[in-house]
Length: 252
Image (cartoon, rainbow, N blue to C red; front, side, top):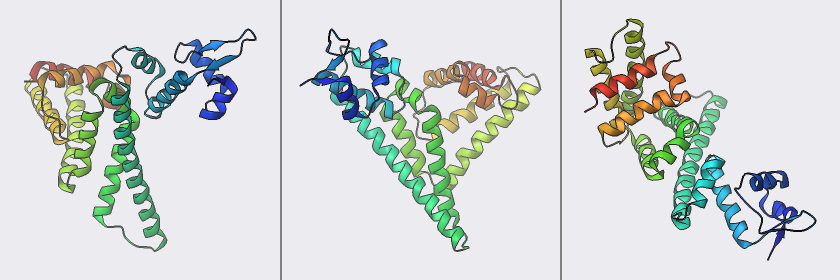
């Protein structure tokens, strides 16, 4: 069975303009183009469009989607299973966040005080949602779905004390980085070594098995990715580079 571009648009919910754009960039080519210029799509193209929509739902960029789908070694079943795992995890996060918001509204309406435990669960849900929105795509592309979901599951399972330590460590790292850069210290200094040790502790609290090479690679990412750089340099420029260089010198 073939679908005209209009029929495929109605079937998928993707606009005809977007389908034409996918054709232009080589992401989704029609099975044939009639003399009139109308595009027609067959079953394979329908399946490919569905895969594209799955990837897009997870925030994957179009160029990366094309690379995956055009790779001869692409395992569609494995990819679908990965999509399902990621989407189920996202659903769980959203359900937790929705529950927390509803509970907050209920407490406000009844002029009740929300328990610290409920506040804590809301903080965790918000942290995970912000992480997924900001860094989820890059982390999944670099490390795969399983390690990312493992870290997120670990964060969800943290006790209040563990979560507070994780947040406190992150804040301490930021403060000591700013002080070190303002003071003109070298990343190879004793302070650089201590900051690296704190950062290692911060990483392993969320379930990461420590690997020095991965640690150094993460340090490089802090400089290469402008979002990470902006986070560390938000108050004092140079903090991301200091952390990268300290990790390179002291990660063991």
